[in-house]
Length: 387
Image 1 (cartoon, one colour):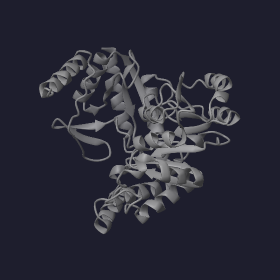
Image 2 (image 1 turned 90 degrees about the vertical axis):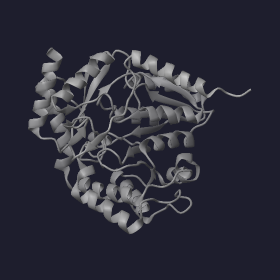
Image 3 (image 1 turned 90 degrees about the horizontal axis):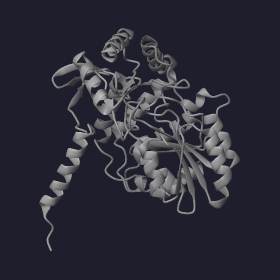
């Protein structure tokens, strides 16, 4: 019996129609960056308020020059995985710098933040273990937890009492336990109570993995969300990315030397993937230097987010991410379209990325934004909401 290739197209078409009816179909659009905050989309110049380039470093002259120089000197690609011939000296040097920056013994760099979280939990947990994860944790933390085949226990958002209770009741039945949270939640912009999570996890010998993708570079003088707590919590597994505030690409795990060595031997998304290109590494190196030496640059995105929130009468944000929750997907899409007509790019975020009934505009702020443009965006959005 031969398969009918048209059945695949029929299946895809029906699924797309369902998504279209629910206003949940995704369609990538061509978008060309002109600088850190201006883009061209549909032949229109827009001010970008939905990028994760929080410090504008993807377009910083020093970062671009470092990337170009590395490409000319070392080629466009790594050529192989790190365990074959892809282990460029720059990669090892950047790992040492990140470890020192985050205050850990060692660091492992992965191809992306998603790949890092697909690697870490499966390398540490298996069927005899349990993973506790915040219900609003990033999709890649869920993917890694599911891939590990450990028992998965989903926690109410930022509910430290629930974690303590479940560890009390369940921990002894499993060999190992992990706790997975974001430091800054990418769709809500709120911070996890990392100090309390760290204490509870340590008390129950559970390993805390914190995804600091949206904290590095913009909180704690650029060192990340953990640095906003006094004293700084002890977090054994500090994950983050090179693709947001650092303006480059890649992910990392900062941890003990033993844990990082285990990743190098057992983390499949590291072992079986081509290493990062030299230009990408050089860009991240230069961006890290700027973060280390310019605390005012790191503080500016949160300052602008708070200015925006004040203009709209919203609660004071904890990060450069400000959600404007509108309810249903159609309303969020319409608001995004109206902002585009006014010259602003703010994408609508819809289920399943966020829960049903909480479709929103996710507004993010860059150090490269002007106060004038932030106030203008707030005025435009206020008019749209009132209408």
